[in-house]
Image 1 (tube, helix red, strand yellow):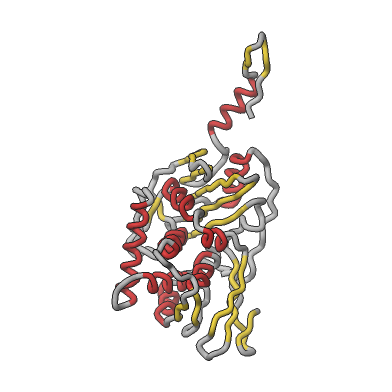
Image 2 (cartoon, rainbow, N blue to C red; image 1 turned 135 degrees about the vertical axis):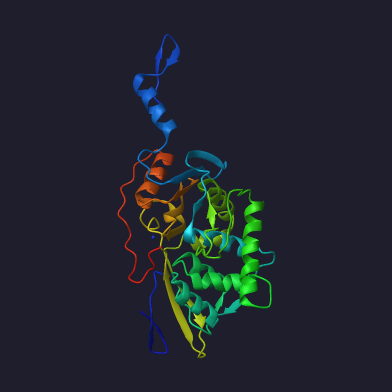
Length: 315
């Protein structure tokens, strides 16, 4: 447990084709032909309603399933929230943001996952990115939207921020994506995307060093000035179980919702090659993500899943 002036602070974690030669001509064997057909078909047994694999370096599709079907994305939304913040011209990641009661009221009202922010604490933009992307804090997402939106009320500022999210989606060629939320809690079911569009977003986001640093973190400890003048320590763990479990995993973001199902945008790096994957509405998102990465890397990985600390949101 963390402590503030002797008082306990809740700990959050916040989830080859072979050939044979004959008569100087390369003639594929039956085994090689079968292997080629299997490779063309992609990884087997993927239960996701939609899925996508991208070779990040050349920005090339490796495999897709229902990649252009519009689907709810839940907290995967927060990837775009982070991108809009980080792509803001002249963004100051060390700018301090005061936690407002409105952010806490929103969590109470919506039932969203929280970074457990405390009213009056002053966290930097960088710290809020950790609080949003690791434990999937909707309070941290609202703080960022309120800070980077425009208008004279929180409602107007967060609405303008969502407009920025949609403009960024258009700029990135995410033609089948629409946001009506800064965190994935959609009141009008107009918060949707596709597996292909999310791969585009991930490809763009991984070009930012701060984003890469945050999403590859299994956990973090962040100190912030508290409302009473002392220092509060926040402990956050990533909801992404691939981190620390799958060799080479470097992110990215989970999401879970009643309509969205279980989702994850993931990435791994091996031998200098980065592969991005997306699964939407998949009850077996982690085993399927592993199958997809293994297929992309032509390997087979035995995984012992990292246990999330008690209190980590199940996103």
